Length: 227
Image (tube, rainbow, N blue to C red; front, side, top):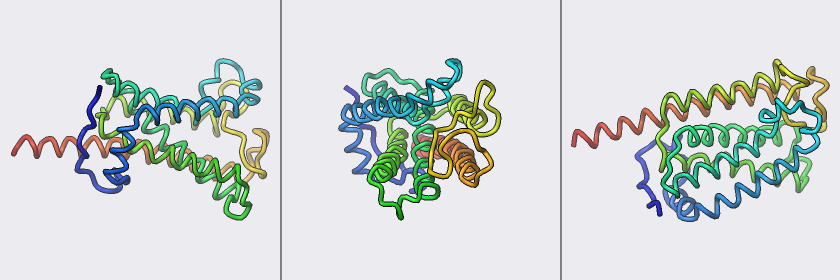
């Protein structure tokens, strides 16, 4: 059974969760895995109609949040089972941070959840905020490497391209969202621009944070080694 690694000496912008919250999440890792698997199942159900209208070859680019939560479950499980998978950890960090916060942006700016008071939109807001925050426990047991962070940036950058700029096969592959932008047919709306900017910006942000965590961890290791 994997022991809980000590908290790293990272600044708040790289490790925003209190140490106690990180420790509880890692202590209840299998519960968090189960929650993420439940979210994955719900997400695939949510995307069922869009998948039916998407060419099979592009299916991996459609259910963004479900795949991210599946990666989170795989990351935690691999740590608990002692089978370290650096590429899974990097993909889980970038994916959960990106798509968790992307949905928060969409609910606040496009679906106007604060004004609507829609319980379902609030559920999406809160659950995806939690999805984004859970990414910040991964650094406790994982080491981000340049190749694996590069892989994550390449994959989620590719997603941004086929979601909003050049679909390659069929139509654009972003999630259907918002009363102003219900289908994938009209890409001239402001909602599309907001969603695209948020997606690209969060891909960059998550990649930069992953590399910054790596640099800071290496610096901390050097200091400990010198002592």
